[in-house]
Length: 577
Ligand SMILES: *[C@@H]1O[C@H](CO)[C@@H](O)[C@H](O)[C@H]1NC(C)=O
Ligand SMILES: *[C@@H]1O[C@H](CO)[C@@H](O)[C@H](O)[C@H]1NC(C)=O
Ligand SMILES: *[C@@H]1O[C@H](CO)[C@@H](O)[C@H](O)[C@H]1NC(C)=O
Ligand SMILES: [Cu+2]
Image 1: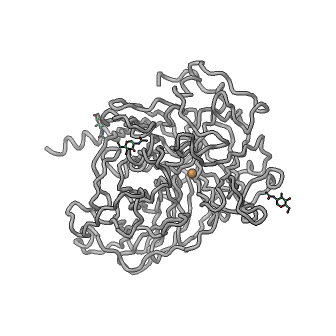
Image 2: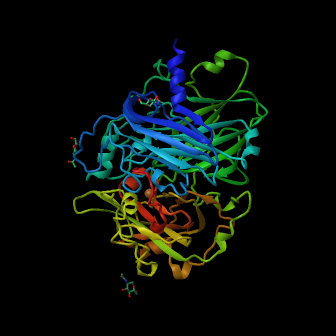
Image 3: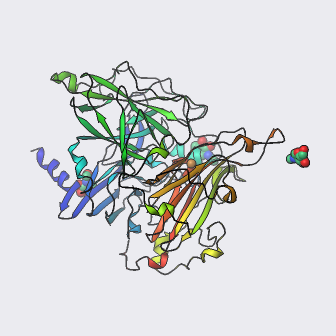
């Protein structure tokens, strides 16, 4: 009797017609306590799950995903932009060739979905495979609204001999989403608070040793580890001894770059952001918000539990220690051992280097099938995007890209293009720093090669922040990086990444050039460059594409631009969406 409704909802959730896969993402606000603390948070979830359900498709398939907003009407916040119950879901790293309308970015590609509304994303998955994810793109709701998106392909078939686990890393604050958004967008903002917990597949145990969240907010008391019967304990990943596993690691954090390691086990990287790379073995991963890795892990040790651990990387003035833990468990024949929730970890922990070193092992990675010759071509243009943070006249902190903090347009840009309500972008030669001030976008012209220099800055004496930049509609090649301030005449020809790989997130590392910091022996007072990366995009995908820092509070504070790519080639025959 009970089976029928379960079957019906399973069929509804994963309805498959030949070559077409359908999925539902029903968005609700649920009360959850993923780290077994005394804090219950009301957060957005997809299909009541944290992480949301895994979407798995074959390369070449058509995908229809219906997102339904079951949230109550928004109660207006006194801080503009905070606390909205609108929903939008973005499919991160999915190129959306010819389907910009399915990209899920409010006011760029669609109206946000209001409470009670729904939107069906309809697109083909072409020319890519590997590990992706989906996440919300409104306010900070992506903290808990995310889930894996896996694309299988013929090219990847050889890897299917490996059994696999999907591991999503995320953060959990003991703070309501609305209060967090108000704090970030309002005049009280000082710095982004540390998460109380780092979660592995939506779970861990809270640890009072963590730094407190929003300054002045009191931290809740730790619950005794085995007190709560509803506490699921640490996530356990079961493996058989003597095999090779593929672990797909998804960086679903919204603030920190997270170190990831497994005690006594090396990780062999084989995929980054959907690109297969030559096997490269590391003892730990640096996973920035939005990044994904596949690693191979060999299970040749003694059969017992091994700690999967995390730490905070590039966290200046903050403890690196993280309570985000899980278990890698070699299976035994003891069933009770295998089913009891786990509250205690093995003594041995993975170790992480205490010193951060910029660019980690990025320059050592190499595409499995050779480097794309495009990385050796001359760019059509180079556009420098310089990020600065300062207070507005009303006291709110905003991030500016070349002096503009991103503001959502009133109507979706794509809709205006399709309805012929928007003028064409200026010609490339008329743009200053690549920007069209009337349209509020960065135009791209069909098939040009554009290099973007992502320039971080700080005020000397203050921290230099890391920024994980993400490109929608495109993967990019990081072709160079450096310290201090990029200067085209001095650094334009630098190519210090031997075999650039295609990825969709590039972390711009804090990389201070100490000679730049002072003038006549005293600290300079204005913004000084503190690290840059140069990424290359081929404009082969007409559409409206967000390009932004994947640190969600930074993005919310304005660290985003919109690429307006070949609008004359965008189909005028899109459905009423
Ligand atoms: C999502 O909601 C719709 C409408 O209520 C329902 O028909 C469908 O079964 C739900 N899907 C899931 C996966 O819960
Ligand atoms: C908004 O309201 C909250 C609670 O009602 C209050 O704590 C906060 O100071 C207010 N913020 C502004 C900018 O008025
Ligand atoms: C720095 O020193 C030089 C030479 O000593 C002087 O000409 C210049 O004005 C000084 N600059 C500042 C900002 O003090
Ligand atoms: Cu940022």
